[in-house]
Length: 485
Ligand code: BES
Ligand code: MN
Ligand code: ZN
Image 1 (cartoon, rainbow, N blue to C red):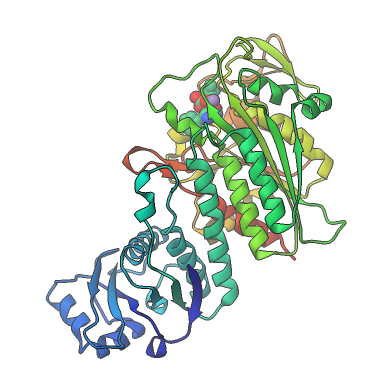
Image 2 (cartoon, helix red, strand yellow; image 1 turned 90 degrees about the vertical axis):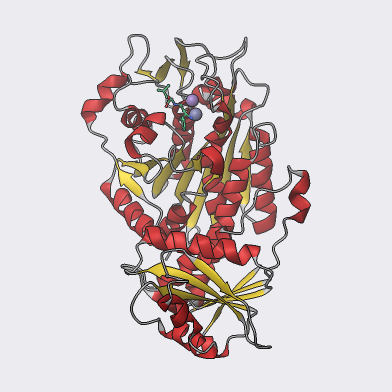
């Protein structure tokens, strides 16, 4: 599907025109224009409460005059839309466009007004969310062959090409992230993630380095290696370099937790919902998706993506509770619980990243169930050792309508990681579980500005609508774009 802009509803060529209808007050200009062509039907339908215009309500008016588009009415409620409601409106509209049999669809976007957002902002988010509505997980059901949408062109009313491009690229990144996340653990292994990096390298001409277990052993990444020890799947540290900035300019680094399946290891998880631990590589997936979006947009900055990929399994060779391992930094870790494995792969990757002398490092990880207890699925948890990074992420979060909430890193929490037998324990007691996980990581990030995003609650949805969300690709893409010169 191609996404492009158009200027005016009066002369747009389309088979289907979507117009926005508030539940009370004047119709927006673009909607009123369309209403004239159908002799006031839209106003009449609202008057008769056949179509009330409530948030995300839709109604199709098929075309009765040759050459005129069918109309899709989309309700926007009585108030200026919040981000939450405009997301609902876009999702409902996207689902309709995808299901209806029209090839050329136009959206009268000037009829949308959203709190604290200008027209260009709306162009980006609408392009992103409408495109995201087209994502489907295909390839594993016999019925997949029938699931082809008829849409060829999506036209959005607007004037800013750059804003449109950001939305389309973000959606492409988010679709990549969701696809990797939704893939089962028997397909999406650490080696599979490594192959996806190589493919990005070929597609976009970025440099890719793969560090295998032998190389990681030479570097002293024994903490990272302790996690994959029980698995038959080899671990990888994957590094990708996007170079759009000056040669001598320090990179911004994103690091993703890539546990392709987390059984808990010898500290085995209970069986219920364990299938969802295929999503324990969603941090890595979000870094892949962001790399794709950035490669599409080609901003002027240097960006390095690092993925710590391993599978956490129990076996006769697996790391056991109480085992002591040495990190690449030299600090020793007592592995009190083999299910707190994310921090064990991340800490060595964080030390490895020092060699890039980064301007900033953000790690993204489905790190703790405790973060879901604290914030649910609404906000990703954010921690930072430098408030500048935190503030830049907050701005990006607002721009992308991809929520996060800053959590504390007070030094008082650090003592919960004390161990009788090693420099650090890998768990900090049940209290403040998300905070102590972040404290663990903070021990390895002292030499650069760093933030940590705990996306355990935001990366996927469980239940009937089970699936990866694609978050926080929007936020990360905006963050990197804000760093471009
Ligand atoms: N990947 C999990 C965290 C997780 C659990 C994310 C459920 C999303 C849903 C992580 O590796 C883990 O198991 N963390 C433990 C840490 C504990 C042992 C200190 C947890 O949260 O229970
Ligand atoms: Mn775990
Ligand atoms: Zn995990």
